[in-house]
Length: 602
Image 1 (tube, rainbow, N blue to C red):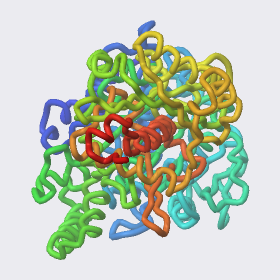
Image 2: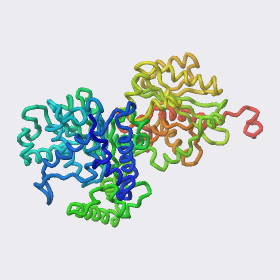
Image 3: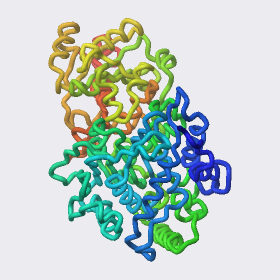
């Protein structure tokens, strides 16, 4: 039976201070939204539409647990860990929300971002030990019916072995120094387990030989910003389903190369959830806390630093030490004028993502120009209907995204481009999770075509071109394609259109150099019109420039098996490559034209 509404609990008190009280000026937009979400949920808890309630006993349990965990470094070493108010909120909300009937924990995923030095590793180490020793399940407000997690499995995951050992190493030290924990656990160099309930706790990274995570009850991903791919994250996410209340817990700061990091893409999704929780997180099971300086905040204004560094709200010795460290890094970075030091200050201390350090085809300025070059579908049709064009395609793996494109040379000297994606219908939901983009929404709005079944039906590419001819009067002069995986479709098109109308494009720097360079030049010159498409913009942000020894360039994904796809853009450049050849070829003059020009004599 429910005993409290949670409206007077420490989590609610903190949320009110953030949303409408003394802490509001110390918090960024995203923390305010996260706190408002908690307050809104308290008002509707336990209803048929929202079957979750806030169980104060479960929230208090995780907070009390940390009193069993001693500090292992710094001036407070040996003293019990007393969570700060913002930590009480983060952990109390994560563990306090449960199902009204079963008591199963509501949140099975979390994303938590804050600045370096704000006790991320210490906090996660304490949670690892909690899941090994004290995580329970019971109906709301009935702790006497508590059932402990049997054979708990805790993975301390990070990008490399050393970072993974940091969380595990802190947990090991805390466990060794806590009499309450030491009597419950056996803790060894690379693995730990509960004396009576078994299970395991271990560090996990890409260097781990056996990465099969079995059935984790708690899977923490430390410093996700440093991960080049989502391999470790996916390992945890895909291992769920074997536990009643598993938790995938991401903790991170910001990082470099934003457009190509899985962490940044996850954060972009998280921000959409905070803005529209009911539509973006329909299951309502993702806890998100993002602390960073706001858009428009000046990093030179020290008053805003607290937004990314909540420890600075305090006046204790650790807060003063952290403030001194941040100020030292600030002075060093900006007085030196070293861009790399400034980037590190902004990412690590202000929690602001920075653009790529890799050789991206489009930087942020070009992406801004691309957005400005986009026009609505109806306006684009007025420019291109009934006009000659080249079409192109680039076929991905049969279970992945396939791309098509069309390019027009307009009478006013501009070029117009249109891109389309194709994806197997039964794989769309899966790819939304792996690629971190909204394929289903894009399909509803016509930017992606879903083909029936588990593999892409490439005949839909041909159908798309034929539909353009039939409904918009496209005068398709040629179809240009990447030959990889494309033999069957090329044969079909040649039979329908003729051998000289379907041309394979060499996928080399030399073969694609002119189109790749000209596409970017046209954008810079304001001579490119793009039919509006979030798919097209996403592909442009993913493209990496590859250069050969002669300075010729082509596009590629960052990694061969990357989920940052470029297929529709690659298809468009195939078409542009041949269209430029057609345009740049000297026009053959008739005999009459030669005589009129005085270039013909007897």
